[in-house]
Length: 318
Image (tube, rainbow, N blue to C red):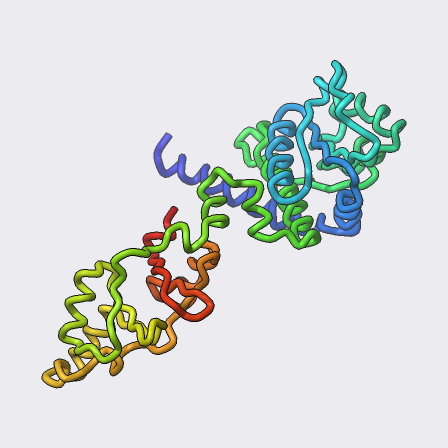
C-alpha cells in the first residue's frame, strides 16, 4: 500500500466525519430544547451512562459537563446492577448513550429509572429504538455510515456522539451564563486555570522600573530603555503616569527627526494615554488587551495613577 493511498484513506475518513457532523445540525430541534430544559431544572446530578465505546465517549461528556457548570459523573450500567444504583437519587437526571438504542445492559437499567420517575435523556442513532421510545427526551445522533473502511468500527458514530455532547454542554453554558472565571474555579491546577486566576500583581515587574521624566532628552532616555530590558520607559510626572515611550517610538523618531532627534524630549514622542490595568486584573484579560491593541506591555497603576508595575507579554505566558 502506497503513502498516497494511506493519505487518501485518512482524508476520506475526515471528510466523512466532517460531513456527518454538519448533517447533525438537523438534530438540534425541539427534543434538544427539551433535553436542555430537563437538565437545567435538575436539582441533583446529571448521570451519564453507556457501554463499550459509548461508555468511553460518555465519560468524556460527563467530564466536559462537570467542568462547565453541570454537576455530572459517569456510571457503567454493569456496575449499577452491583450496588452503584444507590448513587442515583430521585432528583437526578440520566443521560443514556447507545448508538443502536438496543443495548441490553441499558435497557435493563430503564425500568428502575422509570419506576423512580427519574428523567431519561436518550442519545441514540435510532429514533425507533426502545431507548429512544422510553426516554423523556431523545437526541438523534444518526450517521449515514461509519468512516471505517469496513463500515464496522465505531468511528463516525462516536464522533457524532461526542459532538452532540459538546453541543449540549455549550448550550447549557449559555443558558447558565457560565463565564471564564467560573471555568477557572473548576480548573485551578492547570495552565488554563492559572491564566484565569492569576492577577497582574502576581506577575508584574515591580522593581528597577524604567521611569523617566517627560522632560528628559531622548538621547538619555535611550540609555534607560536599554537598561530596563523591557523595551519601554514610563514617563512619570509628580508621581503619576504621564505617558510611555517604546523602543519602536524611539526608532521612528530617529528616522523622522534625524539630526533634530537629540533636541527632542520624552514628552515630544510619548503616548500620553497608555494602556493601564489595576493590580487585580486577571492575566487572561491582560492577554486580550495586548492582543487587541497590538502592544507588548501594560502598566499596572492604582486609583491615583501611580505606577505599581509593568506586565509584558512574556509574563502572561504561565
